[in-house]
Image (cartoon, rainbow, N blue to C red):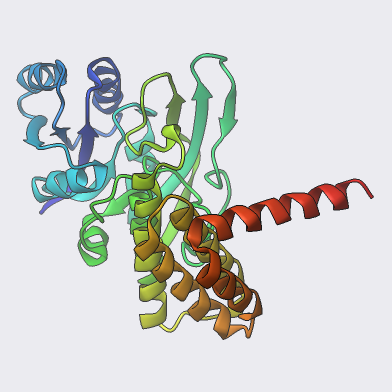
Length: 326
């Protein structure tokens, strides 16, 4: 490990223009002890040629490695295996780092030995409309990653700067195409990793017309729903192993597991739906709230997954409309 160095890992798939801009934002950092590992995730356009040209223009800083297309989690694992720095920055290939990010965040981690990760304000810009907004909780003090990220992440993947020692303790990224970042960060939270916030804008996330690496812009496809299930199952099992079972955060998490079970069932993922329903039952049993699941299971035994979900959603819609008309 090279002390003081920041290793930047950029997974990329078919984004030659955006990659150039993301890399330019790294090269513009005021903090200069950096290396950049571009991981080509099986691109089929001229992205590999662009990545190679960037490396040839900056051979002392930029290296390119490649893999067959496997998604961002697998690409980050490959990048981390080639990284040497004391600090790790994961950067999505369509987003930009602000020039003072590393300077501020390395200083914060030096000054706060108890912190394993530094973050700062992310701004999200819609390139079509020009709308700019603060993203999630990046302009707030996040005391604990767990359980505050259980229902929604408090930052984007680009905002944190991690200590390499923390990355090693967290372990490999799940090789999923969506929610791999949520699952990764919650594993950090379950380890007790503490964040420190820097004052200032450190990242710009760009909404654009090109496909997202996660595929979430395509809606809840079976592949995405399956990854959602796998990520939530992983965190649920780790919560159980760590004896993190307070009902204050289990109650909304159990409802989320039930929702994922219904999504799986509606999309024909019956094995995943059955397991997600069982996990929801385990979680709800902690608070003694299994009555709704018993009724749902009884209906499913008669009608099967698809019709049970459809009838349930219809009933909820009628209930919401009737309450709204009062």
